[in-house]
Length: 346
Image 1 (cartoon, rainbow, N blue to C red):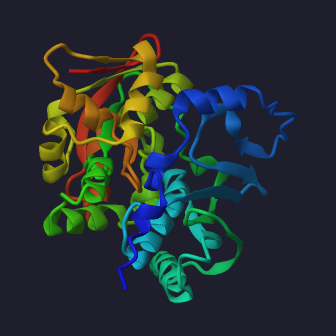
Image 2: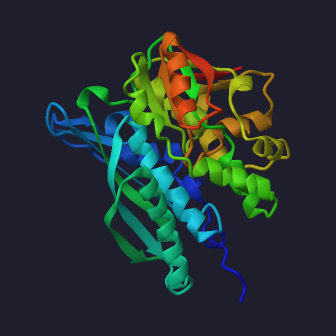
């Protein structure tokens, strides 16, 4: 029998299948938010990574959900990537994960039970690594494979890491290199090398465990994780929420080598183009930058790195925190300045 390729079932995989930012904004604008209880410390207002609800003076619950269609063909790897990506939102809030619920949608007439079981086991293995159980979930029969988690965590109400608290003078630090979306596009075209695939899996299945430790570092002001809207898009959310501007230095941004090579050859995802269109004039690139560099800035990241805005004197502690958990490529990539909310890249 012909081997099953999971990516053949999906029109867009991983975080690249997110609804485009402009379309999502239009949809949400038509949906009234309603009254918010005072205990809801983080909700829809700031486009943050998760919701946060205060239980008492010492504890707040962090709740998020993330799911998508296959970004790779291997069932176990798909489950691992999806679970890692979902739990990342908990870490991005400075919280410690406590449990998860599985979200499962599978074409039962096309995928054998053992293949579906491998996807679920991949997700379960990541939850074990994070020290949490999958306590339940929900499953449906659908046309495209879908897998993800509802992830829950706990955090002290005074230690929440938001995406709308960056300050003028902060430096920006990125925890993982860019390029996962480009590698996924190369994979679907049959052009990704074994080494490139190994890099892709290594980055997308690495839990963003520095999150809770970052919450304990003085001078860490804002954190988000870089996913489907690309580095430029998620940084733009930080700027809009914080009322600041950002300046990036492209040469300082960590990039996966093989992804950079593919970008130079014109390999990109459709989501990258949609992201760029959604930014409008709020993302400004220096004239010297080439199109392949724009593609990397807009590339949708699946299970991407944490993006940290911190005081300059805290940068060494933040980098040491990343290094201690194996994020050797974490780097200072720019600064926060005064002005209208926009991202400028030189």
